[in-house]
Figure 1: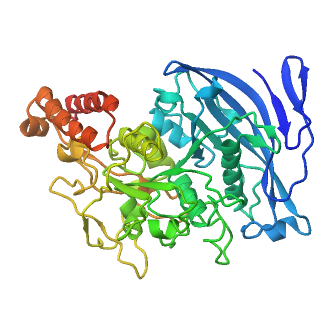
Figure 2: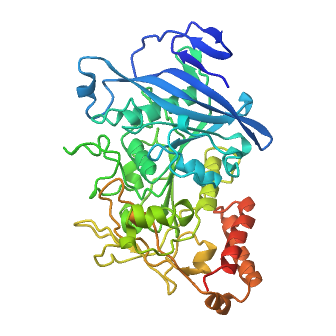
Figure 3: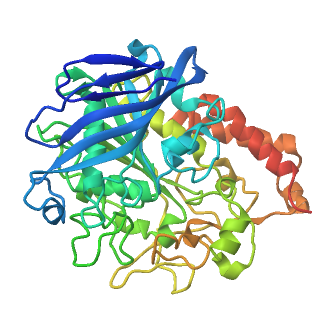
Length: 502
């Protein structure tokens, strides 16, 4: 394990102390916001992926935010000073061989935790907290994210988690995420090489709250560096439904800033988010079924979406059952009046992986590129109920459903065409956005078919699996599923077919 510090304007002095590497330097004074120092507290070996050895760096970045940044409340924080200074934890998982570092996936934390890392690598550690407080189990799930030499990084941005983000100027977190990306893109701290290395292509990603951050970040213009260059080349946003955070300009309405949506905030369309063609990322918006009931995702539908955007709508829940347990949902959160029901088992992770690869191909990588948008067929707004989060003076439509309570259209998971149960109700009660812990509407109830019903519909497991494989092949041909994930999805569905309730 190694540790070290590098500061902008460094003279470049390296000092070895008890086996710990430390860089000693002095920050130069240059007008403008920037990361001014990187402190690597630990470097750990994390295994071999796709024939390459990887390492994990954990530490802190230090930086400064110039008073001229478009951050609401910053003037009151800096007073007569020119800069606000910050520090935030980060982690970077990368190939040891610097020649293999070309693309980095940068996750925006969700409540301080790496949820997208878990989703993409198909493992679950839940809300695990900041980099310094957690070490990953061997293999990091199935290691998918590191195939081909991808790197992964995250940096703290949320007030109360990052010590550098004031509660009255939370847009500082946007500057931190922007300048962390600039650091990775340039590979420089001042005149010196950054210990984090340099990356040609950056993809920013996030789910739910962190997806809302990306919507806000791009809409408010923070993907443009002070020099006018694009920071993140692509954005993969999961389960945001066009919603945004009240941390800066969009939430400048007189109420206190908070890292959450306004309860009656109207979602943004892609055309409202992507208003700077020269610096906006290629934007991939992945929407889940429950987002239409809790997050009013239909209002973010764009009749004429920007060319550099795609939207895909999936029949899975915002948070599927594999990521949570009944104690959290029905006891701690008191969802569904504490009445325990099965939760949706539909797994969107393989499809999100395919869309990441497609986005990388669209940005010049080896992938085939992205398929055309895939959307649900919408019906009317449902009547008022605790299972639906309406919006005053708006027509909030939801997907039409078939006789099996499956949404019509969208990306056709095999279990949407060959269901093993009913998605009813689509969102648990209360399906509100009243506060940061009001997340019951993220979960969808599931009414599994009995063994007798499955047999009458599909016959035996071999016949069911054969029909599933045929549908999976269609998804692979369309670029909505990776060929390598085909077998795993089929086996999971076969297992669920063979173990229904009595």
